[in-house]
Image (tube, rainbow, N blue to C red; front, side, top):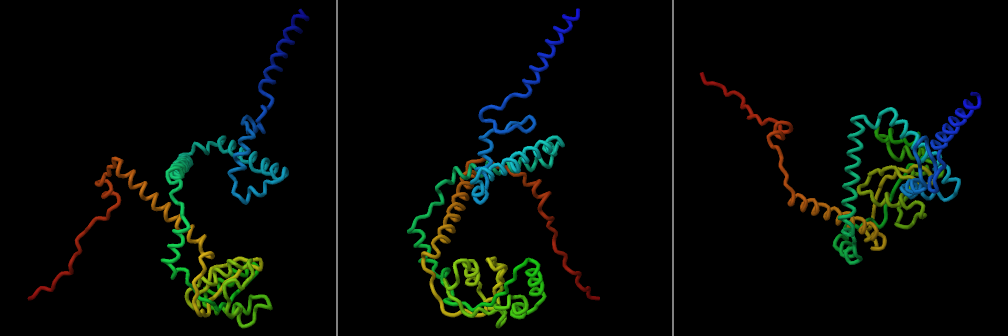
Length: 303
């Protein structure tokens, strides 16, 4: 009897071990990780890495950086998703609407990418034609006379912005907040020309020449030296910027315009081929304000 019990117990143990082993399957050749019961393949990892912005991709050039991304983004993301599902967040009606809106937007974007592909190509002659016909858009002062306020912290920047909004003079604030070597004459830099500043100050220069009227103050400009505000004091002369300096700007503008025109034409075509019915009665009931006749003031009655 004892041997029989031992034999039966051995069989049960064998099947339990077999079952446990079945639940703990070895990872497949392309299975990179398993988070609880969810498998993450090497293809999944590569897709997530490829979808990162260019700046983030440039940081994934070493094995250590890839491992950090894997553990701190891929695995963390999967754990958070599983936890959200446990709590039923994915079943929340508001969340389901957001997901559906996002799904529709992605499908529409994919359609437009397919249908508008190649419709925004811009040729060199088109760029030249636009440049010649719109020369006034690329004509600017030969020189601009500017002042600047430059601070090194967001705290100081907020103080300056607040005081400017309250009416304090730009040059007074420049003399107060600028570093010692830039406080003279209320932060005046005198007249500057295109290309006079170091390349690192290209955004500063672009902003200075974009100011239109004397006294105009720019938005905040960042540079290695901190946060800059620029005020236009004067401008003199005029010059047409060379085509080479503005070609990329013209190309981007024409590409956007061509894509927008192609999009509008495509939508017009879809509308012309579709059967669209609008419940005007419901529209009027829900959205149109009731039109009431204007009441005239009562006229004096003659006695």
